[in-house]
Length: 163
Image (cartoon, rainbow, N blue to C red; front, side, top):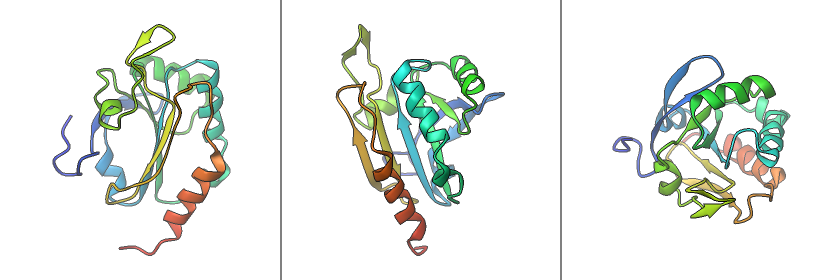
């Protein structure tokens, strides 16, 4: 994982949109706009499934240009493929199997439901300069984020003039 070009939060992780496994570098997506990172504990867990399907169904995200969404967990790309297909998710899921990115963003549970190093449930929005513009996280992985706050942040980034 290298972050030299894109600043302190840049990363490259394997991921999938459901068919092929590819590498995704954060700075490739922030160069032209904002990125929403959705950190979550596990594919197929009830709260994670509800949250990711809620993001899939957020019409304002579908119609917002220059904003990419990525889900990040420690699950493998093979689990992600099945999860994407089962729930028709419209954005890539990235595999942080070593936990490097969740540590970089300080979003790791020491232990959650007898699993060590699980990502906290969190939303992070970065602009094109990798500045964190919105951050929501919870210590209780059963809590869900306020999608209205995320929507307002994303829409404010889209409405800002290009720097």
